[in-house]
Length: 206
Image (cartoon, rainbow, N blue to C red):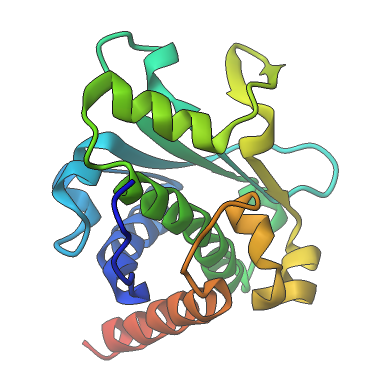
């Protein structure tokens, strides 16, 4: 494995801005390639995509994030999609944007871990890299959700009350699945929130 360089929360600011702007305008978002921003590794830009969509979720669940193995749906693509679903009806109202910021900050912390793990495998190429990456983040247990086959241990679900209660104090193992990581997830979480709030203040002054 490649020795990982220190990652900074600011590496993901362009990505967050892109996703937030898209979702606020259309309640859907997608980032791929150069849309990830200048600080993301060029190979990772081709390997990952991130999508956000509105989805009606059962019970009190407000957000669901899942890492999808694109190769299972498209045999010509070695890559992964981090798909985020948000039940916008549960955050509708005057607090829509603050709640969305919290949800997005948490979900991009999850993506930061997958990005860090990808960098560790970057010296490999093609099928070997993809196989090793997937092997590290799954125990090969599957569940079926409608028409999608997804990795059970790669699903992240939360309600707004839970995230408000825990905020950035969610344990590191929640993001890392007990694998090694040098990311300070609590700091990343609050950095993401601060960045999105500052960006909003600047836009309101223009």
